[in-house]
Amino acid sequence: MSVEIQFIEQILNNLKTHGYPEKRVSLPLEKMYEVADNKGLNFNSVLKKLKEDHKTDHSIETEKVVFFPLKETPFSLNPDAIKNMDPDDLKKQAEEMMRTMGPEQMEEIQKAFANMSPEEKDEIMRKGKEMGLV
Image (cartoon, rainbow, N blue to C red):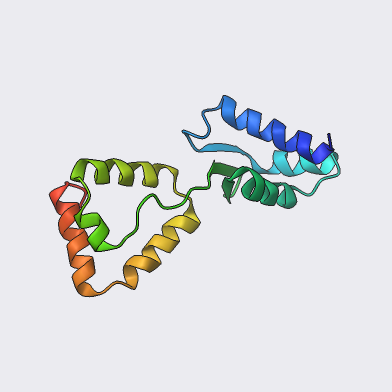
C-alpha cells in the first residue's frame, strides 16, 4: 500500500472518529501540511484525491481544513418540483442540505436562485414562509 493511500486512510479514519460524515470535521491546517510533507506528499494532491476518490470535500480556513461530504444537491431549485413536495419532507431535505453543504455548493445554489425569474423566486419564498424558514 502506498504512503499516499495510507495517509488518506489515516485521515478518513480520523474524520470518522470525530463524527464524519454526519458532522463537518476540522483538522489543523499547518499540521496536515507538515505531516504530508514529512511523508513526501503534497497535501493539496491528497485533498484532491479525497474529493475525487472518496467524495470528501473540504474548505481551507485560516488555521484549519474543514472536511465535509461531497454531495449532490438533494433537490432541484425548480419551483415546480418544490410545489409538489410534502412541506415536511422539503424542510428535512433543506436542513440536511444546509448542514452538509460546502461553500462551493452554497455558491451554486445562490447563482441558480439569482438566475430565476421573479415569479420563480416568489414561489420559493412563499414556500419558505409557509414552512417557517423565512
